[in-house]
Amino acid sequence: MSPNNLIPTLLTPDSLTATNTMNLVDSVLGTPRMNENEETTATETAMADDENMIEDEELQVRTMDVPRWLSTPEVTKFLVGNGKAKTLEEEYECTVVISGEGSGTKDPNTPGFDLPHLLVTMTGADVRQLGRLRRAIEDSLVDYIIENTPEQEESANPPPSLGRLLYGLGLSAANASPKTKDHTPDRAVLARSHFPIYLHTRKDDNNVGGQNLITKKVWMNVLELPMDSTSQEYHGRFLASKSFMNYYRNHFHCRVDIYGVWGDGEEQLMCAPYVLITSEEKSNVDKCIQYIEHRIREHEEKFDVSRQGGRRVLRGENREKVEES
Image (cartoon, rainbow, N blue to C red; front, side, top):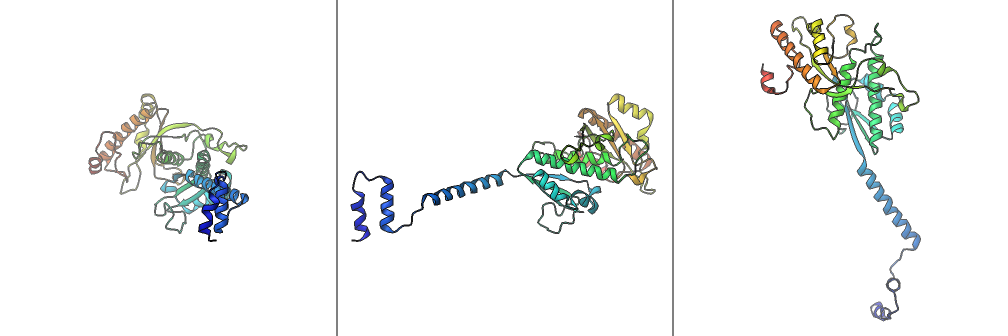
């Protein structure tokens, strides 16, 4: 009897269940059938594949720009050399990749390969761990500045390059955040305070990574200083008169620090001379920036000096017109 004639005969009884029917059909046709263990294994494998797909989809990526003036092979080694990268990845359950100028990366397919500065890319499933990892790398950059700056007589004063670093890190963090809507360059940002220095030197040995005990945040912004093209001398002392300093403090409620124009210890400065403005309120910083910018413009016109990056574009001004002036 052929299989085609046998199947209708076996399927006619009403008492035959659907499961028995399938078993009989498989038996008659010679179709291989999974046993219960095989079915369980297949189900578990499918579930595992689904979980892996979910994990892959949930991986988060965060980036951190290192300022161009600090993007050197020495800094890369300080951050991830001598097994530090592996230690960070194990501690924070994330991956760390550094690319860009000064990284030594040879793979052109690495994100940030062509950048003129270092780019730190952090990938992981836990955004809290990514945040802790970013903080650990920021702390390492701060440590690099402190360790490579001669100790000053006044212990409360931070290294002159520290404020510029913290502003750059604050700007990078704001730009990297998915919640950030304002990506205007040279804007005021909320960042770690540069003063006093003990905020960056007192570490908690019991905390993961030995992070700083205290984090004080302030609104800050920076301004470039004009330079005499003939003497290569930066001008900035005119902003530090007693009347000006009192005006910054009493009228704008801002702290203003000017670095790189005092002649002594200039080798301590790793970046170009600059003005750092900080305050508890963003509006104070914005107003103080406008006031100082206009004072710098008046000085540039009077002494025929200029800034390498050009004039700061203030709110309400046209960028093209400012660049032409």
